Every structure is written in C-alpha cells, then in structure tokens.
Amino acid sequence: MERGLRLNPWGILRFITVLAAVSAAWFFLRSYFLFLAVIVTVCGPAVSFLMLWSQKDALCAQAVLPGDRVGRNTDFACDIFVHNRAWYTAFTADITYSWSNLFTGYTERTKRRLWVAPGEGSRIRQQMNSRFAGRVDVCIDAFEVCDLFRIFRLCGCRRIDAHTVVWPAFYETDEEDVRSIVDGFPEENELNKSGINFDPDYEIREYIPGDELKTIHWKLSAKKEELMVRERLAAGHDKVNILLPLEEDRNVNDGLMDSLYALGRLMLHKEYPVQLYWPGRAGQLQSCFLAEEGELENLIGEILSDSGIHRPGEAQARMSEEHPGEAYILVQTGVYRGAYIR
Image 1: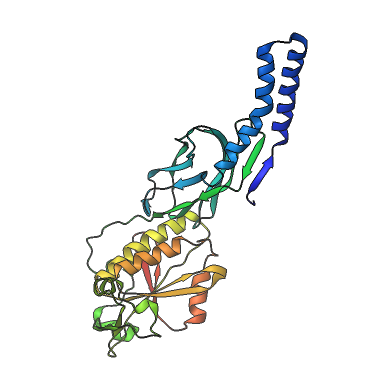
Image 2: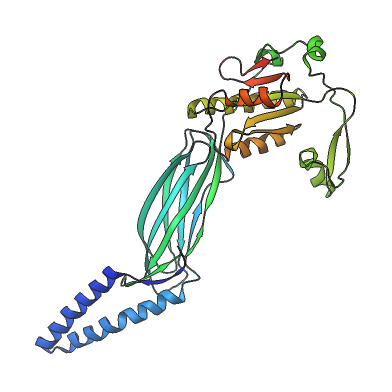
C-alpha cells in the first residue's frame, strides 16, 4: 500500500456523533464547561492530525528474531517493536504480520491492534517453535497508525522484516569408515574403477578474472585481504558426487537434510571433496562444489531458503538424464544415510 494520510470513515462518524451530543447538551444547558467541551471537541482532531503528521517519518514497525540460526524444535521469541519517538502523544496501530517457512511452504498470518505509548512505543512478543528445518521469515504485511481520535490513518509506515534459519539436527558419529553410513560405498582399491579416484592435493593462487566463485578460498582471502582461489592439481579425479532427493513430504525432507548435514561433514572431514546436486526451482538440477565445512553450511542455508517441495524421484531422473553413467551417493535416512548408485 502506498504511503499517505487517509480519513477513517468510522472515526469521522464517531466524531460527528460526539460533537452533536456535546453541542446539544451545551445548547440546552448553556454550561461554561460544556462550552469548553465543544471547543476541545472541535480543536482536538486538528491538534491530533498535526501530532500524527509530525511523526510520519519516525513511526516504524520492526520485527526481531534471534541470530542467524536456531535449532529445530527449539522455542525462540519473535518480537515486533513499534517505535514512537514522540514524548507528548500516543497512537493506536494496526499491524498484520506473517511468519513463513520457505523450505516447507507453511505460512501463518496474524493481525493485532495495540496502543503505542509516547516515548516507549510498544512490543508484540510471540513464542515460536519450528518442527521443520528451513528459513523462517517474519514479514510485516501491513502497518497503519491512527491518531488519538482515530479520525486519520497513516498508511505505509516504515517496516523492517526479519529472518532466521532453523537448522537441521546433527548427530555426531564415531564411525570413521564412510562405508559404515553409505550402503555400497566402494573399497579403497575400487575407487579407480568406480570413477572417484581422489587426489586431495591442490594449490592456492591469487584470483584471476574469470575464475568461478566456488573456487574462492574465503577463509584465506579474509586473512590476506585479497581474493585467493583453490585450484586442484591435474592428477586424479577430484570429487565425489552426492545427490539430495527432496520430496513432497516435509518429514521426509527434514530427515534428508539431517542426513546430508552429517554425511557432508563426514565426507569433508575425510578429505573427500564433494559435488553436491539438488533439485532447485522448476525441478532444475542445481550443483555446487564443496571442499570445506563452511562451504557446506553456506550451501545448506541456501537450500533451506528455497522451496523444498518436489516430486518424488524427480532428482534421480534429472541426474540420470543430465549426467548419465556418473556414480553418485543418494542421500537417504535411516541406518544408512546414503546409498552408492553406480
């Protein structure tokens, strides 16, 4: 809604009713106090209008969520603050806000009316708990402020949204052998035959225009204060393919994200660089190269910030169509968190 000052029809009707009643009482009783009441009733809306207009740039509704990440099934507070810098007048505000999980597609909307005290403002606090991983957005959809007499409405006031990411669970494993959590993963002497001959050696060099962003070594770049890239040496194949098969069921997807987090961390800890594939928008197969845990966490945050609802088997079909003959680990849940597909 565009920003602007509008009249409130119900407020005008109430004002006319009150003015008529006070004027009639003064006309019949001719009281000095009733005459003052008529003057106050007539001048009040004008003063109220000026107070509201003077604060049009200061009024703001701001949503606040804790940090960048919270755990799944964890209670956390969502605060919506309405700031009022005026020390001499109060307002009433109508706020419509919604919170949604982008990964699961769930949305809940709430409308509240509150009193915005002078100087202090007001706050709405709501306890939240997300059973499912995903990016949670709290958006203030509408924010209108009315003057003390509720005759004028100020629409389109400034709004500040907030978001956080509900993170998948991570279960530490004492298993050091990848084959213990990936069904059918080849033995060391079978790696060459399976197409995942691995050479962990790489060299670091300065960034050259045209290098892919996924090759940037972000931690080293931060230390050196210049972009550095990681370049694999020519010998050997440098990655293991992992496919994340998201489905329509939110519970299934939750388990798959847990498995991906644990599997990805183990593979990187064992110095297996990973090429991760997952279904993106419109069913298109997305991919990203990972060589560090920080890159894995950034990518998981990116996946959780998009819709995770996809047709069962869609990712596997895309993988076979776009990368025929390539072996990959299919992320699964249960005792084995992955199955090696040759």
